[in-house]
Structure formats: structure tokens, C-alpha cells
Length: 140
Ligand code: AMP
Image (cartoon, protein in one colour):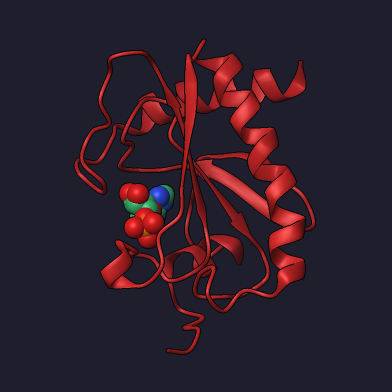
């Protein structure tokens, strides 16, 4: 399977589609998942094109993982989380729905199960409020 430059996240990276961004640098961007599995569900997306983990260059992985950690710490602070779940899906059989490598960063609270993967769309104002909390945690 080859990389398709018309996937949704490639369009967000090129600025052709909007996203509620919380962080960006030369290597990656992070934005709110529009169908969050918990409040604060964030996606970390490397700029370098690959479908997923299976075809990614090792350098892409080594550059993005510190950002996954940075966002994990930020969502933990922003949502006073008891833990953080990191998820990453590969190909349809692995649960992947958008074919540009990305990592899910989800704040978790004791006893609270995750909502369904790619379930319901969240309101824009709610995503903006959650993003503001994460940006503040990143700045602290
Ligand atoms: P997956 O490819 O299964 O790892 O997950 C893709 C994720 O992207 C899902 O959790 C979707 O809710 C999310 N998603 C899809 N389209 C957008 C979008 N335009 N902006 C933000 N998140 C999105």
C-alpha cells in the first residue's frame, strides 16, 4: 500500500483543512481529535509522509516520540488525569481509518472507560476549550 497525499491529515498539514491545533514545530503538529474518545483526546502527526508505523522512516519515529511524550505530559496536567493512553493503529485490520501516521494521546481517569473509536463528533467550542487547557499546560 502506498502513501496517498490526499488523506485528511496531509490536507491539515498543508493548511487545506482546518484543525484545532495545540502544538506545532518543524517535525510534527498536534491537534484535537474531532471524535474524541475522552475529553482532551489529541493526535500527534509527524509532517514526514508515511501511511503508518509500518512504512515510517526510523528518523520520523525518533523525532516524533519526544513530542508524543510532551503532549502526554501536557494532557495529564491539563485534565488532571490519572493516566494517559497512547494508541496507534496500522492498516484497516489494525483499526486505522486515516492513512497518515499519527499517535492518539488520551488523558484517562480511574474507572472511566474510553468512548468508541471514531464515534461521535464533538462540538467545535468544546474542542477549542480543551485545546486552550492543553496549550496552557504546554506553556507552563
Ligand atoms: P485512526 O486512523 O483509526 O488511528 O484514527 C483517526 C482519528 O482521526 C479518529 O480518532 C478520528 O476521530 C480522527 N479524525 C478524523 N478526521 C479528523 C479531522 N478532520 N480532524 C481531527 N481528527 C480527525
